[in-house]
Image 1: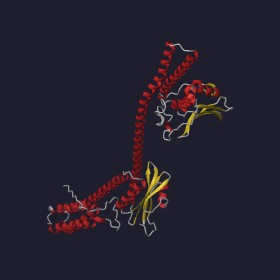
Image 2: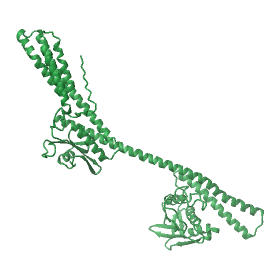
Image 3: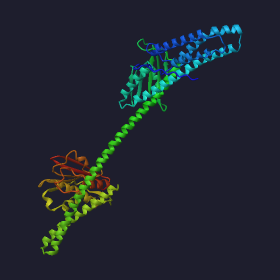
Image 4: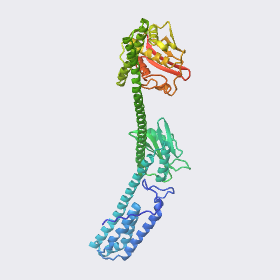
Length: 523
């Protein structure tokens, strides 16, 4: 026969969970808030046993002797070890008079032996069943506490707030004063009671990585017994749990607290890992969003570049076709022929520069550096050649060349250096007002030659300045004011870095822009 008794708590009633072995409440009682109900059940069981004893017959085979098991089972299932033991003893006391009288009267016959066996079974059944019920309840409460800890640490709150919530939770469940000290980098976060990580017991627990029990703290205002046990994760101490209580802390309770501390340490580590994973997911989402925005911006820039490039290619081609047709169909003076030939030469070089930009851009997108063939190049003549190549109507803006006498030459690819200087000078002339001055300056410094191109144009807005070296990018104030592909400065940066040099830009709105590059000097 199997008897199962389930007692449902009253609506709205709050019972005290028993996480550890026989944990007393704040008043020191063992049964705590279930004391009243337990006493009522225990009294009912004793009365039932007395009634059974009064109604029992002296017959050896009386079925009433088995009815004594009912109150014993009810007491064990309801009150655990205490209830099972008390009801078993009450059953023995109720049966003893009849049993001993029968033994004295007829000796140890079959009926007496049957009664003795039944009584012995009840004496074993009560404590055994009660102890199993008590242990099952303790284990259930431990699991419930661990689950509550996991839920408390699952909130997305700062670590100090999580620890405070955890201390309140453990304080309610353990009926004790709880302190948690957790290492967070180079600092300690202390939550709960005013017991810092430097407390002697807590500090000793951290240093020795073992539990420290103080049977008497010697403080009248605090509970007398204290247990400090480390919170460890993979052999590393990450904190300490301190529990103080006025009631007794048995060896079994201390072992349970040590196990609970291990669960808290693992839960804290899981919470940290979850928080780190959330931060990683947020950072990844932000990076994906930024990359998506960048790709969208790049796609729009490429679309604008295609339209711009078609215009840039069409302009020199139109000039070449027009002037070549004029030369082929009409007769001009030698001076006019030279003038038109010079125009065609400039447009041809412009077309070649655009094509070179396209080729270099394709290399950059493949992650390849532009090819360079190093040679010794004189800086002064290179600056002069760039100015002469950009002659014609653009020369309404004066170009000043300031090359220091200490500057001799640079180790560079002559064609690449020409493209660098022409790009910088072309930009300066393009965005400078008429009759202003553009200065090309060269100086020697620590094995480098520093070349700068400075104009007196409108300047570049601060928010656009960090992006001027990006392919396809053109500052908003430049769009519509002058033709351009948005590749010039990107090509300058790639070519300069291919020479193991560097380039930077400074600009002030309303004053002008200065681009500075450094190239290795001739030894």
